[in-house]
Length: 596
Image 1: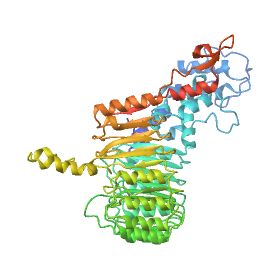
Image 2: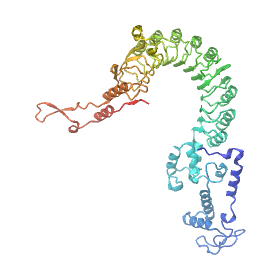
Image 3: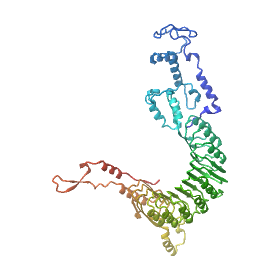
Image 4: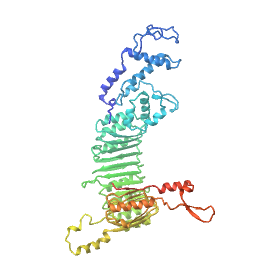
């Protein structure tokens, strides 16, 4: 639960008044006005009594029991060279601090009056002792692992913990916060004020985001290099394009900006010489979009899927290619992607481009693939999910990118068949990830033929569509690690021979027959089978258990005492080497079949 921080807002008057009441205690709490040695008034008094003499018990009638206790404890524990008055005052102040309930919402002004036990010293943190006899180094390691809310609560334990938490806040360079829906500005101001060295900031907003929040971040974090703002379902991002542009222009150290819910930008002009990573999502109907970022290397733009989006992607991509020559990773997700946008991108001639993702562009065809292959022959990742390419486009990709491409994503491509997938796996030797979800689909899965009339022509029509509806897939690859076939309801048979495959997604493969499934993948760790038939799930569990089971009959050979012949000796009779133990641990590794 979030505790408000009144020390950064106008509502801190009551808190300050309570703090003032704490600071100005009655006279008896601050000690006696008489000398502790001779009993005479302290004003204008020079005591002639030696420090070793004990003060009479009747000379301190005005001292309170609490003050007497503190003075006695200080005289027994303090070094002789220190005056008892200073030591007593210091201990009494610490004792008062512990007695008062100081919570994380106490004003920061109360802390400035106390001298930090670690400031101005060159001692080893492990040798410094804080409250409870715990070394400062141990307390530091414990507290720095707490979340911000826990760290705020730990500051109210005692003075030693409070000082340690202050040092932690000052030394913090990265902060991840969940901002509540109420009092977000006060909460943000109180936290960021404690972190003058903050470099990386990630916010999960449960409240609306506006220009005031940006101004608070800009004022409190002068050296900010990384900022990420994620929006919950109940929050709204009200930042406009002009406000975001001014923020980026003022933060000259900012290198990475990631923001969700950017539906109210309207128009966006970003100018920054330091920005290298830019992620914006939920973009909608941008009248103008200009990126003047010469050092930008990665950009991700996700547009809203509303049909009335009027953003001109062709103009945007054309300008981006001219003003951002160092781009290496491009991700654009929009239903308005077309062949014209691809041509504008290829005309930019971005020589350093390594990752290209153009998602949900149904108008992207094989001609677009040909333009991409001719302009960018060093791509390591290509994502054309949701496009209209076919097996011919996959052939172009394999002919141009056999020595560089390691990740290929072709999900939601209805024109791709199992033949194209098999060809890509055979022609791309460096492939490590392949996503073919919803490509091999049953065209009649939504329309059941049982609703039609039971004529003799029905079986004939179904038999004619079997070669299109149900397909088999055979993949043999030595480096493939992740394969996704989710939603491939038209897949009838599957054979995988991939020794490095560790993640397989078969969710919603409803027509895959258990007897036509063959998994020769000894490194499998996770198999996703949600929405599959029970018989298929059982076949998957049986095959992965056979692949990972340790062969119990492969005992070591050992010759008899007379040397006549060799016999199989159990492991308990023969010493095991370290390699055998490692091999056993690898072979006994279990594969998880996830069905939820």
